[in-house]
Structure formats: structure tokens, C-alpha cells
Length: 258
Image (cartoon, rainbow, N blue to C red; front, side, top):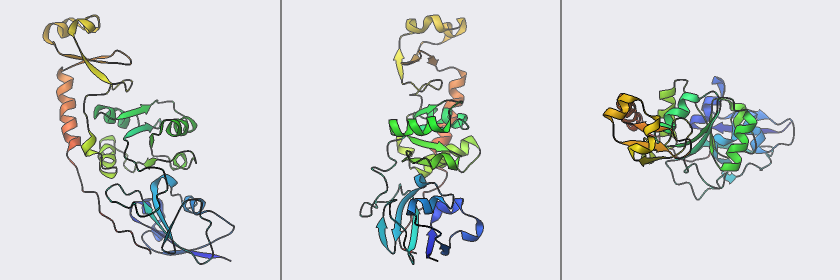
């Protein structure tokens, strides 16, 4: 029976049982298989993988695993230049626009608050998320491993944390997005872009006290929702300042064969 040696690095170990984490282990091949199918058989979504080495040589997902191979699998590297190695997708996760599955509504709201382009509905099916990601070239954010195994999804991230604020910090850190924050530029309701407008353009939407005490307004170009600097703005501003402060440093990694 054919045997291979595997080693998964860094964050990819989150998907493995404890006895297989951060070690090289043997695996018996029961049939002819691609390295993509082999990796996902261990519960590791292909969207989490950036570099695969077979016997020290970089390969893509279509590589057919051979008897005696030494397979090293590395996560997405956002803080390193690994251009000399074969990448597994056309471009890295540098275009920060997202589609978020139906279970992460608060995360979607927070990311919109920070200015990110986020498509979200609370009734999305996995198939709809995969289609939107493929057609619009969006990054999938989810806590569903099975969703990330859809072949048409090329960019995705499995969110480890279960608390929304921690999820935001995790994504900003892992995808190195702190320099791309643009708070208060997106509609929290529909994701449309906001624009400055004169008071008389939103007058009909305002309550009497708002008309009396506020003069600066923004409006969503898509749904027409009006925004102003009320008491709620101060709370959201403090929240944005909290998110802007990196909670940890992205770990620098060396790409080596196991």
C-alpha cells in the first residue's frame, strides 16, 4: 500500500486532531488522488492553503500524490513575499471585499462600519455564497468548513473566534488589513457607499430633534439611508478606534520542507 508523509504548518493545524498537529505523520493512500483532495480529506479547506511542497518542490492542487512523497502544506501568507513559489490562485487576498455566510451577521455589520465592501444576507445558502464569491471575486468568511471546500471558491477564510469583536481583530490581523480601514464610508444596512449631502436632501427622513440639532449628513447612494453624528456616532467611533489598534503581530514564517 502506498504511503506518504505529511506536515501541516501554523494555522492549518487548527483543523487537525491533536495527535497530528505540528508533526510529520504517515498516511496510507487508498486510491489515486490529487493533493487537493488529500488535503481536504483531513478537514483543511483548500482556501486556507497557499503553498504546497512535494519533496521540496512547489506543486499546485492538481498534483497527483505518489508513493513515498513528502508533502508540506502552508497557510495563506499575507506578510511574506513568496512569489518565487507557485501560488495556488491567480492573486493573493489583497482585494478586501467579502461575502459572509448567514451565521456571521454581526461580523458583517462591523466590517461595513470599518469601510469594507461586504455582501451579506441572513438567508444565504452555501451555494449562493459560493456563486457570489466566484462571480464577484470576493473572499468568503465563514465558520463552516464544508462551505470552503466548494471548488469554485478560490479565496476564503475560516473564522476561528466565536465572538464578533474578536472575529474582526482576527480577520484584520490575519489578512493584514489595518492599512485599508475607511470607517463610516459604507451603509450598515445595505453595504452601499455613503456620500455627503445637504440637509434639505434628507429633511423628510429626519425626526424633529434631529432637524433642530444636526446639520451635517451623509446618505447611502444605494438605499438612501441617512446618517448623522448623533449619540450613536460617538459609540461607533470608539468601537472603530478599538478595532484600529492591532491586538497581536502577524507571525513571520519561514517556508521550508518538513
